[in-house]
Length: 374
Image (tube, rainbow, N blue to C red; front, side, top):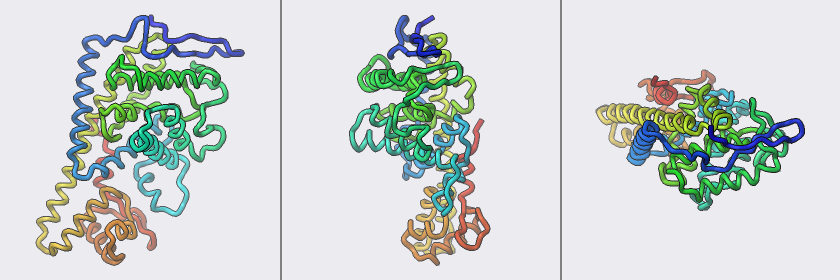
């Protein structure tokens, strides 16, 4: 059995200090079955990357897919809200629920980290990770110490992770593995980083969400994906008991192989799910475009406005008249008329009954985003 770290007595606690990556004694070597699975996972990630490049309006999907990962990764931690709540919140004057705010925080944390990597040309480092954590835990108060590594001991199930005095050193070594070590291809490396991060457990709260976010960041930094269109938490959530068991067995049994196989399956099937969802959304979009193009009752100018409005509701699947007005730079009355037409055609459904501030949802699109294909 591979040794993956050592225990140190700190007071009454036995703290686990993980060895630095890559795995040693013996080194991690994929067997033929895992090698085949790696090839299958890379193939599916490649298909997802390729189809995302061909999309006529990729940012539409990107926003929705980031929200989907935010919902799934938060749900693993017992934070439950809905896609409808997340898309509705920006249109409301009321404060979001704590759960909805945490999901919104995740989307902002991912955007912030990606901006630091892409626009500021920073490598994935403690600076990026701490900033992402600061945004993720915004509003959570001093207990979660947003943007700082923990300063106290914690217990996670049977694991008492490294004491605070060791965290900076361990994270520095993890940063080196992410950016310098070339022992493994990127996809494998991202999975090893995730399990190592969870064993270090550098934050008081938010470790799972930041650890899963790191997978996507690494794939983007190393050019496997160009956008965060993958949601690996789809598979982790569906198999959440095995997910935690596989993570824990790395520490207790040195089972990097079992974790890697599980992780590669997560990447493979999450990619398959994402591609299928994109195809269904594109089919819906094309069907609605065809219907508008064949409508002989409207002028070419009116048709163009309706097609532009269709693009808007894909970006804002919960919408009000004012949002459509501002997005298309049209009059309030024209926006109101388009909403009425979309309601009559069944494209939109009224979400609330109040006279002022009415909201309308693009139900068919939301249904595809939330559909469980299996």
